[in-house]
Image (tube, rainbow over all chains, first blue to last red; front, side):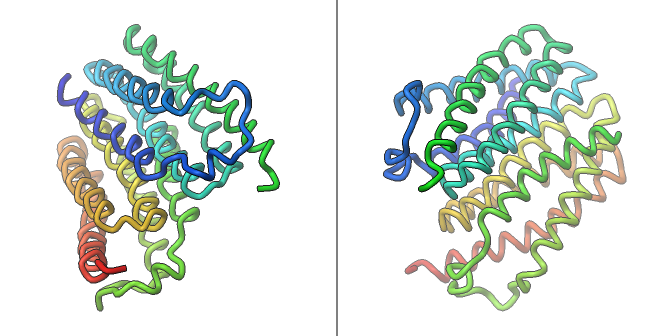
Length: 150
Length: 150
């Protein structure tokens, strides 16, 4: 399981690297943001926890025959996850970011169901991810809506 | 197999979307590029073929028990693939792009071996991808080396 964990962690590290390359800077600070926006330090902490725990969950799942659908959905969500940060923080495309985040939410919801079918603990570990994406989606939506003129 | 094909195609579409968001523009045209640089139109054609054929290969592989390692490696390579374009064309980080491309090459080589172990045709379908990445790596290397001062 360690090999699988390291592989899924590597995929997650590729997604995480986008947050190092495309940081929230003056552009982000200048946006109108909703009152429920978490302070900046929360984001790397939350993402670090989520990347590690979901990589562990996927590694648990990979130990079972019949895990193919769960792993295919892991691939879809990690690609969409890697895409979101450059779209939002790199290209400042708020509407396209909302589309990517919506597709990511659907992919993670489907992955959660697939994980639950294979391994209970793996499914449970995805719950914080879908909760966090729901918050991120609400945030992306409000930032998009409230900054149309920028 | 159609469901798997569509899922892997969706993951590949996320990677492909980076090429739509971060296009080679005046910055790229102004770089010193080696003589073996393909003309611009070759890139979307090559990538379209590779994304579709590798998604099909992964869908073939997903039909077998014991495909977990192959699919874990697919996830790693699609995340790294999605990362490369924003790093290179978005952030203009040529050295970091070289690192990402090197890791991508290793991930795809490992995926090719894993695909061959499961399905001969799937393995064969990855060969053009590794050939193309070798060219892309040589190109990234030369562009990095020859544009240190920009």
